[in-house]
Length: 136
Image: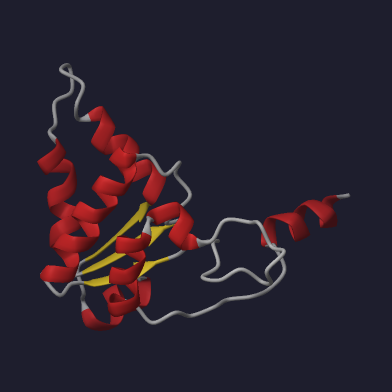
């Protein structure tokens, strides 16, 4: 995102998805000085949006509806969106019972992402785990 901003002067925005959801929920508080639209408008308008940790939030109906609103709006407006997730697209084998991305975000959203996105798998050692092991 920094590279796109520096090189192309793109208007970019980064959100950890759970933090974005909390901001939206906070906007429902009557004491809040903001509204859902005020929180979401910059997300809708950003030339480039990075949503970090897609699927990390518990997949309630509200979370799925909110994800659909954000992703569908950006899709329809043809806005560049970069998603990161720790969830795989497929199970490693038939005995694997772990959740995949589709389990977390739903079939309709996953289908939309197939059309919107190019998957870039990044594999490597867990950075935080490596740092913790280096300290011991």
